Length: 537
Ligand code: ACM
Image 1 (cartoon, rainbow, N blue to C red):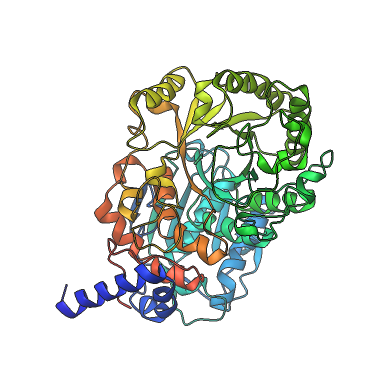
Image 2 (image 1 turned 90 degrees about the vertical axis):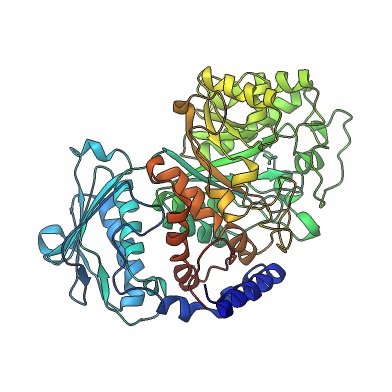
């Protein structure tokens, strides 16, 4: 690095420290884009594919390109249209979706049920001047493959107005399947409320990195965000504020369904979370019968945790849980319902165990599988339950061992170590937004760990995958979400998708740097970490 460049970087870092990246992001789209090669080497994407064989000349998208699908598959048609919608604005090409036999030298989306090796989400991409073929066993695999096609193209493909081509995809074959079946992201819409459109925006960002699970944290002390017809005050009262005293908000059932359907169109499963028995002030404020003294507390707009609890001995509590779980389960096509269970500091241990013993069967009664934060291992996780580990390096060994023992006993684990995957942790002491209770989490720290060996004593096959939670005590706008998620989110997504054998910070940081012009083209505000060799501004 030359001296002026070094000084430039330091200055930029200083800017990022104050403004947390927004200023830097605003300034640099064209320079980053100009640094890109005309043809991105095959596989230079995030997450890195499992197998890449470069060969021959590139495929070129033209005004005559058609997208061929199997006419009998509605799912393929929808994915074809989605692909045309992604590539159309920047290329200016019409990209009609046609029967495969009429697509000629175009893009072919092929479902091949006998390709068992591709599993539920895998795909094969073959790129050559004669055509571009994506093959998958399931529609989800075609959808993941479409993200690869998208990332192989120049970043300008993400812009919403016609850009200069050419639009080439390097020649060769990519064969790609995920390491983990569960690759999640959590959005806390309780501390600050985010609208349906804002959630859809996040879903689209997740899709680009092959994330397949959206966990929505729908209730907390500061707000209740989902309509429950049998308990209308939860939303009219409990949803009426948020951290800092803003107006809050909630999703009607139709709006929640809209989110679920949008996520499904991106092959993401929504996991709704109702956090219990703690983190329940908004519910207690709405229904006094849920408190042990029968007095409703005021609404809460601060950021403390651990002060609220549903009243465990009261039958009314379980009538409430039944109503809520029944209605939310009915709205949710996914397999899971997350019952929280973290930071129940105002619930005695015995009460906590009693509560979980009563509530888990309610979830099962309505056809869902329990997910809980890892404190659930302090009670007895139901058979088949998943537990989400959110500890830190410094978490006491006994607590880690309790979770590992549950895993040895058959409980599946989702790994969300807070000092690695929590996207709301500050990157450095100078990060404007976020919290620091788990420490600072720079980009390398968030990427550079191995889920398979992370939790001592937990069998590798108990690890279902990884999830990056985004808590929003300090985050109120999509720009705030962006700058905390980017660029850490792509790294966690890669941990979930790419084979362990590909894990290499030095290689990853180069591919991540190449994402910068794509972030810019998508209008994503991001943090210019000094650990990553970003393109010059
Ligand atoms: C948590 O961060 N309380 C799960």
